[in-house]
Image 1 (cartoon, rainbow, N blue to C red):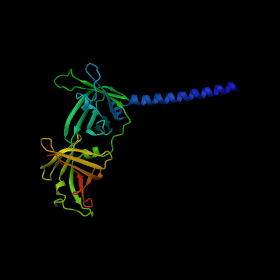
Image 2: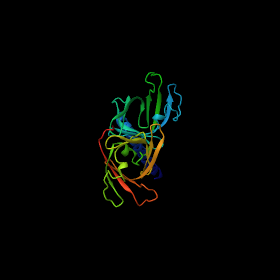
Image 3: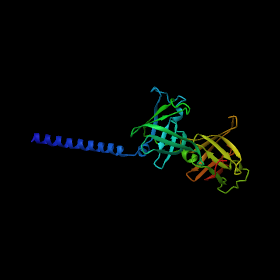
Image 4: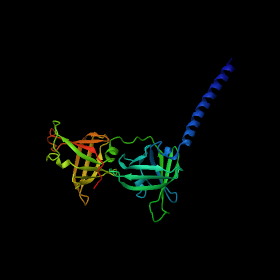
Length: 283
């Protein structure tokens, strides 16, 4: 009887092991059946290494490669977003992989949809766990290149609104006072905040008046919790002209509204500046 029980237990263990092996094999088969595009969009990627043309390791802080380092999100709808390892948005736009999985193309876009650059790289490795491409950094000397190694990661894409703010131009379409009453955009209390805004994925911004005349430019950021936006204005020589932090009330694909408090010593007086998504090209 004991022998029979042992045989039953052994048979059960064998069948259970076979089931797990079968599941694992099925998972591998599913990954193998994915197209190159499906593989690239199946997971976020983190830059974990780089090598030069001699196969030597290059620090990710090296100026030759640090512009290609970060967390990359290639989405199924053909859009991508790349963040630095500090979770700051670096670029956004569209992507594609050729049907043979030999090259990947990205086109980085401005908020108004115009192209900043198009970059085509050779894919060396693309599977469920690794994505490595070769970048030629000197167009006049193809012998100079770097292999940028990415590893599958579970790192979630930042959700604090950076990508949303950088994905479209914004037009000031309204303002309200502390009582919720509309304020004319020509009113001196709010007129300095009115215009067309372009928050670019590289952390720079430009704001034009509704007459298309440049009003300010500089750098921008959103707090990690998505509650505040900060502008640092810069003149033509890179000198700081102002720093302004405002509370974000609404930030979605069609509306961006923030609250400005003109006098920090009197927080009971404030204005809500309302912006709407617009297709206006940057002048």
